[in-house]
Each structure stands twice: as C-alpha cells, then as structure tokens.
Length: 173
Image (cartoon, rainbow, N blue to C red; front, side, top):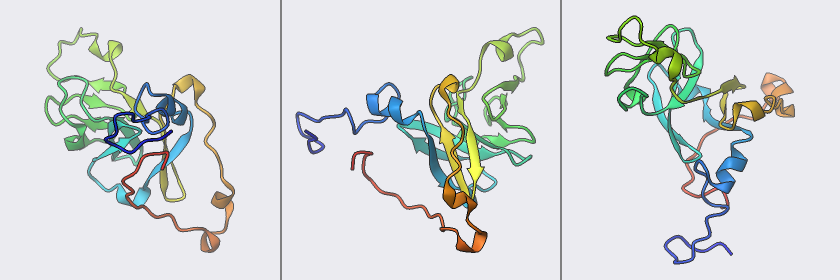
C-alpha cells in the first residue's frame, strides 16, 4: 500500500533509504554504481547517496575517496577540501583525512594529542571499474566481494556505454 507523497498514510518501508531505515540498511549491503569516473575532475564533489550527504574526491595520487560531507572537526563541508597527495585536507582548520577516513594530520593540536588515534572521518570504500564509480555503504564486516559483471569482460569496442541521468524518484519507483 504505497501512497502518494503528501498523503497522511505515507508508507515509507520501501521508499526511504536513509541510515537506519529498513530499505536503507538492506541496500547498503551491495555495491552501487553512483557516478561516471569522467565526472570526477580535480575538485571534490558533493553527492547524496542513500540519504547521506557525502563528498567524492580523487587525491593527487589518483585514489578515490568517499567521505561524510562535514568535517569531523568543525563541520565544514569537505566539498571545499583540498585534495592532497594522500587524501583530502579540510579548508577550514586543515585537518587531513585519508580516503578511508583516517586522520593523518591535525594542525594546531599539541604533539601529544590523541585525536588522530581516537577519531576518524566517516568514509566508504569506492571501486573504479569500466568508467564507473561503485560504493559500498554497509557494515565493513559484511562487505561482499566486488561483483565482476559479465559486461566488464566484453571487448572495449563491444561494451555498453555507461551514462548518467537524474531521475527525481524513490527506489520503489
């Protein structure tokens, strides 16, 4: 019984995919293609996946990171972060995060500070395959192997062409 948005009896069991929702927790157990590799240039990009505000970036060594949008330190958007040789640096106080969310540097903190060992920036693994970026957003211990689809094995001149289009609808639709 799926009702129209705005209805008093909106059934959200299958339509809401944010963290903690039944559909969201189920969908997070799979690898999802979410962006064309060609769309990711030199600057980080804000993206919204499964109800979460995130930032995708490519560091200067070519690795792709997908982190929570707001810096763990003061909440500044990492969309304005500065890609480094390894990871991304927040533009506000300069905290430096690796692609897995590990804190690499905390400028202005005392040398004995334990922040780097006690905290991390939320992050999700990304795989780049055949011009697509795939993310896994579920529990790390439940991560399945990355699926190798038969279309990945086709010769380059016989492969399907990936494309991106915005569809303003929910997963059920």
